[in-house]
Image (cartoon, rainbow, N blue to C red; front, side, top):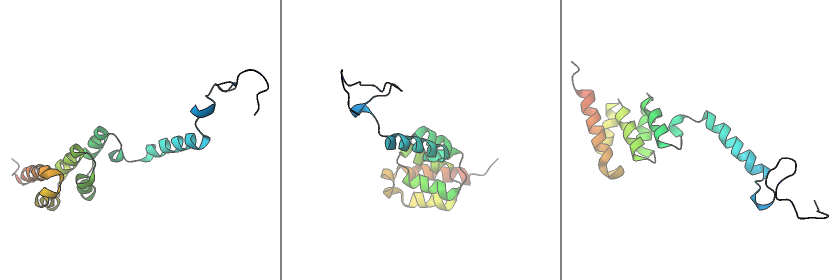
Length: 123
């Protein structure tokens, strides 16, 4: 579009959106919308927010998934919550056995405490 007279507008006269370098491409806008829609279907334990992940992990019962989160989550606090939620004694023993390889050995202590809780007689 060629402007015949006057300064080139900085905002779209129809919608008021920015023109020029500040304007997002349609592809970028659609990509953001798509990512937002996919976020609606993403499990909460995969959230980018560690607090949301911790709350979601506390509700999980899948022992394989809990063990995987305990090993591979990017946040130590989320890993610890996953280990504290485990009830599979074999998985907890693996955390204790491989203690030195996991976050400086801290998860082994969490796993040992959880294993003691599970093995304590109730009552």
